[in-house]
Length: 207
Image (cartoon, rainbow, N blue to C red; front, side):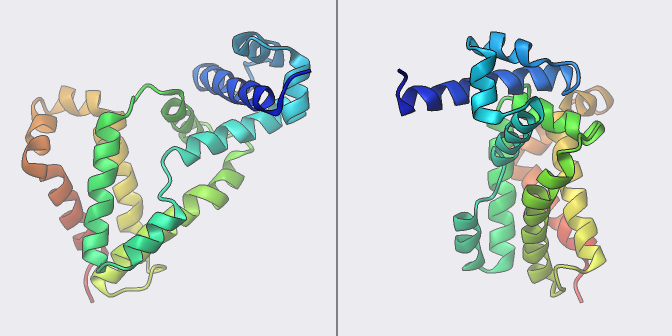
């Protein structure tokens, strides 16, 4: 009989295998048989851990979301700093992560797919993971400009910041095609980080 550790390893293999397949083909095109074969296990193991393909997809989407979260303990530490310093630290850390992580990872591909063609699980993931992240960033930016986190100019600044991250890192091939050398220019002396910080603060607008 397998141990608890073996069971956890099987569950992790199923999430990894399903993540790869869902990212490449989408939820509807992938079968439980495909996932079990990719994970090197039986369909019964998938049913045991997740009960259905839809439940497995939710777990996979959660894993993808967790990959990019500013965790609660990190938020607590950032709140101890002045808002401007905390905002710049977050921008620096996100840029560092985006420059070092694999843009072609299944986590990034799956989230990009969800952005284009959201599944029924997206609303739940957005409410539990995306919205709290946006709320926290709005809190930081609002603190810099002296406005509440629910101010529409502050929310516009946060939303624009997410879009800019996507443009310059997920779609960097487009940036290089249309403006050759721009990515290298922005990478020098943290120009991108400084520009983005100043831009979002300007968009939010001080009182």
